Image (cartoon, rainbow, N blue to C red; front, side, top):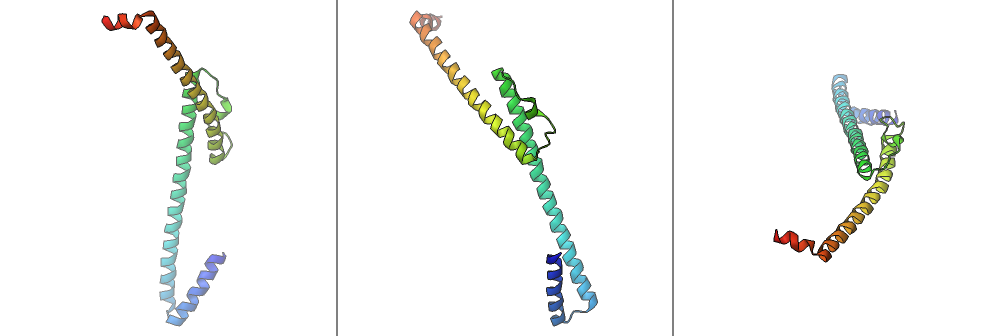
Length: 137
């Protein structure tokens, strides 16, 4: 590649100037290759970690979607819950986050409705004097 050949050319010029013999040059190249391989392996491991984080985030999002939908007694598009969507991890997560935003909004509205109902029940109990009876028992 251009990077490798350009680096080799620059190193040859420096080594000519320094006066390295073929064995010293070979040793320098061997060290360079080991460091490059280590760097590549570290990068691959880092990217595998990124992919695993995406997979875990996707699994968590699917679980939240299922749990919230069950609590709200609504259906979830089965395509969203498929294990092999055929999408990239980024696209799959984006799609799930969009669905989660909608169901989270629905859950928030449901909680607000429940709070209103609770408040109305408390008011009705107080109006009927039920609270006082409960307090005295």
